[in-house]
Amino acid sequence: MATEILFGINTAEEILNAGRRRVVRLLISRDEKGQRVSALSGLARSKGVPVEFCASLVLEKLAKGGHHQGVIIEAEPPTTRCTSSATRRKRSGPPSTASPTR
Image (cartoon, rainbow, N blue to C red; front, side, top):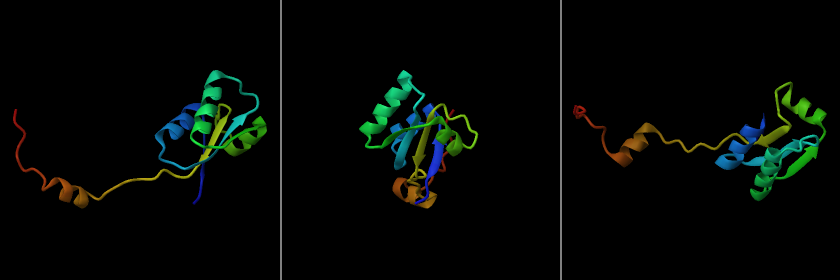
């Protein structure tokens, strides 16, 4: 499956916490030393995601000019658990025709 390159500390944290994507790797700039980046690295490792530290130029190239904040995450597109409206109606019964009471 194709992967996406996403960047930024908040984005990476949300992707790891949501668990809706298979994350291939987390890339962190060697220049990043902050507590949030350290915590993000620990979170990724706890989820079994490989963490790679690399030169800022590598991140610049992958982000194609985007503001990466020293963090890039490579992940597959999110999995969706959609059901059709017909399937939802079967489970919950027919739509209500009653008017709301005021």
